[in-house]
Length: 184
Image (tube, rainbow, N blue to C red):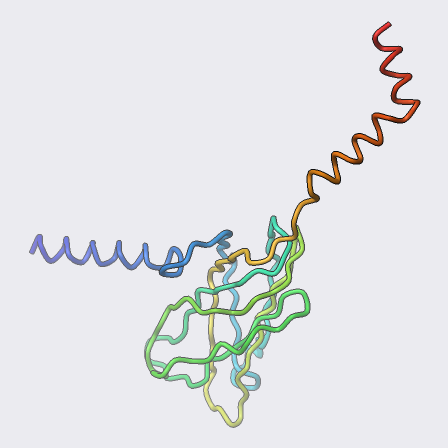
């Protein structure tokens, strides 16, 4: 009995660690979406929540790859086409397609696309890609976390251009006068 409990606890720990970051990926920025983002298919559910938005803060401007932790399925429900796409700063990602088993539950890291970010606040939009009809079920899908991988960060000014600016400043007569006055 003790071995069974220990095995179950180890599996829970491994599962928890596995969802911390996508396997084989190191996130430059990890964001826990609070509250979770979720949508249902257009015309598929009385909530009619076909889009969701949330502000996220990114410290580095540039084009960055985004991966989302996506949960699909609920107990005792079979839903086809739990599909969506994301938009960040006017750029749409590709449609994140549903998995093969419409009656199963799955929480997986899904690539959302590469998006242009500004330093500071950026808004992520999650939009359904499912339509009822022809679909007939709610097609709800939830996203709980983001992994952002910096791909293209604008470079800082080169040292040589700063050195030239500093040299020009130091050679101005007004600055030279202040240096001489300070020594006196």
